[in-house]
Length: 424
Image (cartoon, rainbow, N blue to C red; front, side):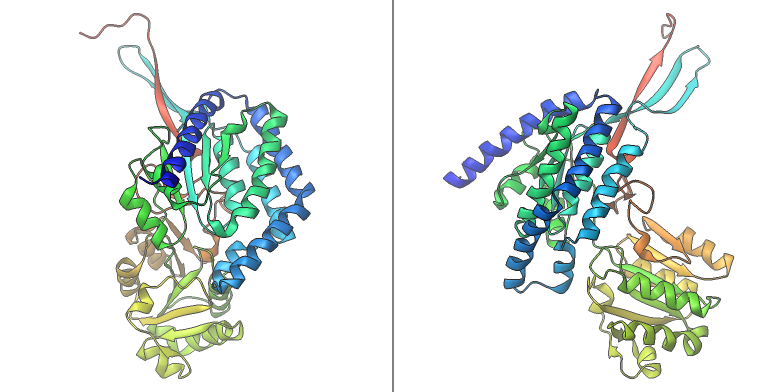
């Protein structure tokens, strides 16, 4: 181990120890104190907006010089409107019920024992993210409200913005008399810090949440020695069924692809039932192209839309995060389901249909975290679910799935009350 790695290990070890101590306090923190911290932080985000925007401008300028993609820049960029949404999210989380101590279920056994299942914090959450500085606020707020401490390790591209937002969260913690170590931002961009977090910081991290591209997620899943809320790529699909209304098919598909092309809920592949290919395909594609979207279609699509590029096998495996969409004509809902099952990432899929039988089959047979009927895939967002925000979209099957909000950041314990029972 070189001197730099040794120094990083020392720094990260101390961060883990402080987080564990803070988590012990937060587990019993009063709801009013947590809510005060969040509302003060929200006010600070608005009050400090000029400083945050200035920091972000530096991050964006540095990233632009490196020639990063448009989608990456979109995720990195903070605007006044986006800052207002950050503050709004903090206030919405403050307004949500406190999950800690909530009784999930309770029952009585024949022997008179009363059993209750009660929500408890996970402990210390490690969040490793790349270009989205808003994750600093979302993750900090959700973990705080759910009684957890959090260790945030952002990417080097967003470091100035993340630090500016983090300072607002610290103002909230200080005002509420809560430990400042409850929300820690790793001070180094050294990649060795990620490795230390994945090893668990001497048992001080209870779960890891990765927010980033395939390379980051692959490293996390390969190296992590603690549980991971898997967040795979968002290879999302929209299927236009034979019964779909044309006006709805146009509106929903354009929004699903083009509202924000760089988010994980953006549709990357459009599937169209062959019975409406002659009537629906061209108007939908024309609307997409009018918004600047590049079309990559199979041979059947190319016959109807000669300007479309021929899609390769790799295209249907690709999360573009850009104004590009793959398009395929399918025989029926069964072929649409088979395509999604083969190519999808178990993230988010939508069906546009007026046929309840098709919708029910789509909902039943597709094993993705989020399924929508007659609605845009861009609703794959914790804020849109009423969670106030999200720490990520979990695509695995254990503990948490879909938007990870307050309840998903809790485990549970059993409280059993008796009156002298002994087991025979």
